[in-house]
Image (cartoon, rainbow, N blue to C red; front, side, top):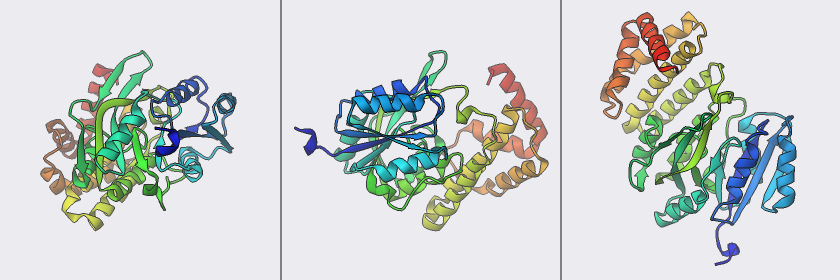
Length: 327
């Protein structure tokens, strides 16, 4: 079958100062077993030579288009890519990550076989020391309806809210874009995308390699309060549209509050007293929902309980655990 008879997949790759990684990323996309793809590289004002590497690749392969723009952030770069995409399907690959050769073939097959407009695969966590930790290949391929999918997405068991590792029908993004200027930009929109999709085809194979480099945005010491805002917006969205699923939204909001508080401890940044009190209030107000969340672990319940009993003791235990486990 010729490429022209196959649906086009547009792969959006935002690039900003990732010279050591971008070639490996682009090579992995070019080596896909599914070849009817266009690669939209959005250079978000790189100054380290990444932009030159991207231009060189576009000169060698007509499937690559490079768009240069001033530095406006990951969300804006992704939005530029979405606006430029021509494909029936859409995917995202971060420029310091790389994908397995069969990723888009498997995702497309799963989507078409199960009549889904959204498919997601397992991931590998790849570390600087060469360690690879696979995630998700613990269960068979399957289809999740919206309630189960939104639960999985918020527990991070098989997949999460990252825009990557997924294949979307492009129409899912009609009227939806990533919020510019926010961290955790994926989290602000994924619950809406999953709602539109209504069901998700899950491929258990770990096809996406998520590189955990030490100097990435997600590893920086900036305290990400946007994550808590995104969780709040998701909670309100679920309350309005799916009140029977409120346990998921409220529990995720409480978990986000604890995650942001933990980031102060982990990065040894003094936590403002007002924010500590806000976290206590948030978790206290979600206690009835947490009690009903039968999908969360016993360890997570203990974590919530300990924080509410004594935040100072919680801090001591957290720091002890951090020292012992070198996190």
